[in-house]
Image (cartoon, rainbow, N blue to C red; front, side, top):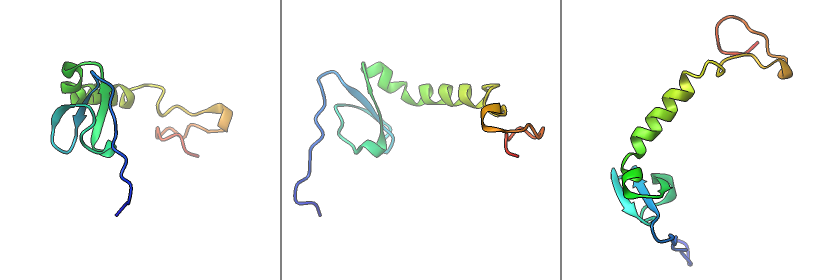
Length: 84
C-alpha cells in the first residue's frame, strides 16, 4: 500500500466516461485506466463509446492501413498484412 496516494485533480468542466461503471462523471473519480476523457461537456462524455466505435471503424477501414511502406522495404505479398 502506498504511503502517499496522490488524488487526481480535475479542472472545472472536465467530464469523463467511466468504462468500469458505464457512467459519466465530472472530474476523474475512477482510475485513468478505466476512463475516457476529458471531454468538454457531459454530452460529449456520454457519447464516448459511440465516438470510439466510429474512430475504430474509420481506422479499420482506412485503405492505407495495410499498404506496404517502401521506406521500410515492405513488399506487398497480396495478403494485406504488409509483412514480408
